[in-house]
Image (spheres, rainbow, N blue to C red):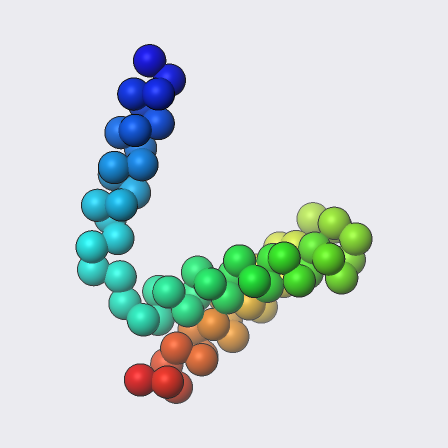
Length: 68
């Protein structure tokens, strides 16, 4: 039963990515990278991770906008 639910969720997530823009990818990638950097710099602090993710998302969006 759990595998079926997981499969359904994965299918829905992939279907939702059918019209992803370059800016969306920049935001997502920046958030992940920023969260990793924020966590590493602050020793795993929740605030540092969230701050890094927010900053990374902003920077990722700006980079994606400027590289069109």
